[in-house]
Image 1 (tube, rainbow, N blue to C red):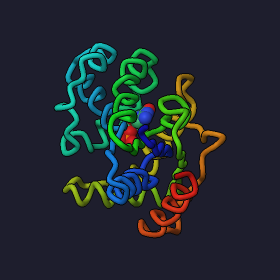
Image 2: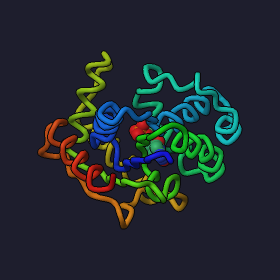
Image 3: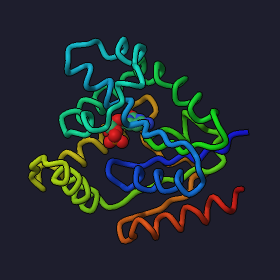
Image 4: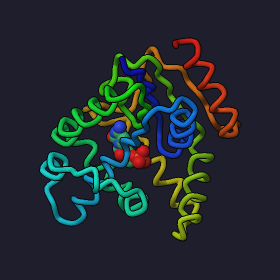
Length: 201
Ligand code: C5P
């Protein structure tokens, strides 16, 4: 039986950092499901039809270095509203969650739609300002110049699109534990998450 940790939350809340640390701590596999939508978004920008791109997605398409730009993030959140795109990506995510001894998946609908039976569900959030600031640092670290006001506006617009879409919107699962990372270091967020996991193991 595979143990699944589902992590959902808005953009740049610290989901990826926490998910990677949890996966390393427990020796579980990790899937950043945002990369799936980013890969489909990138294919749309290249002229492909999004649902067809989602159906023919190759794990080799999931190169984070190419996909972590604001343009691709924007395209990802546009294709993520399309039910046919979401449906095409379900099986890959569920197979990943079931394979091996344990898996950590992060995204927007993992605890609600993809893995509603997950043993642990975390909803990770932080204030929009702190999230925009983190995204800025990531972009600067990647050598991409960024304007703080523009990043904040994009974070807020993307949150709204993710929360307002009719298929698999970003909502907190009723059985999820909330972790607000606004005033937490990554190590503090990890120790809270470990406490939640330990209570369910
Ligand atoms: O997490 P990340 O910023 O990489 O996700 C990019 C976009 O992909 C999100 O804004 C969201 O629209 C979409 N997404 C989604 N469901 C997921 C993961 C990401 O709709 N499970």
